[in-house]
Amino acid sequence: MIIKVEKTQSRLKNKLEIRVNNELKYLAVTPGFHTKLPLSGGNARRCLITGLDESIYYSTTHSAVENIANAAIPLQWAITEKQKISLYNIVDQENNVCGKFYTLINGYLDVKDIIEYRNETFKGYCANIGAIQYISIYKDDVQIAEIVKPLYVINDLDYYYIYLLDQYSNLEVLFSFFTVLFDFREYNNTGRRRRTAATRYIGNKNNKFYDRNWIANHFNVEDVDSLNNLVDSINNSGRGEEIEQDIIKLFKIILSLIGISFAIGIIITVILLFVLL
Image (cartoon, rainbow, N blue to C red; front, side, top):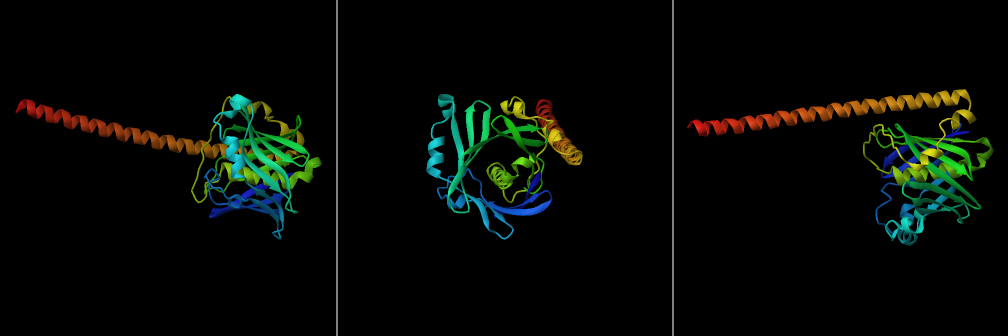
């Protein structure tokens, strides 16, 4: 199955729509401020995913005390080889904590996202290739999903595609909610116009978990072609943005050189006038 998570509002608060195989099934809301602000109120950071009738499937609680304790020692992972940050509890419909979302650091460039849900654990490995971010989701040593996130967006309206194996369709809401929280944590720049040019990250240990053929091997040709067309379009847009920025930078450099030359010319002229007089 293919799930699309799309941000439809990024002012005051974030609103997202979730479509499963092109059918609108869920809505999500996240706060309209950056998560790294030192706020203590857990409810102020509450994220939730609902049905179309606004009945809540999952929400989050955020313990400032627990998160501060986990981040209290700088580079704690270098000592303990393990550090949890950005931890959120998953709360179910009965208001019971049924899992956690957090980032686990095991070493330099060894960073992964963890989804704990009841008695299962899933690991997400991010890799950025060109203007696309890929999050490969593993259960044990087997990849069961891949999240594709274009880095090139306008007006902060981010969107994601989740490619989830059909045998794990019972996790569609959980992985959709993880994607919503990932967006809240990483791309919550509400109300600002944003265009992100193409980037490529090299040396990330997560790259080895990214299988460029995984989607092609598990989804039909039409879906793969559609994704490839999207990636090509975004990368071309990103390259266009980079060219535009390079032209602007070059123009600024030329203006600076002209200004410097003009200033030097004035100084030389003044010196010559003093010498001749």
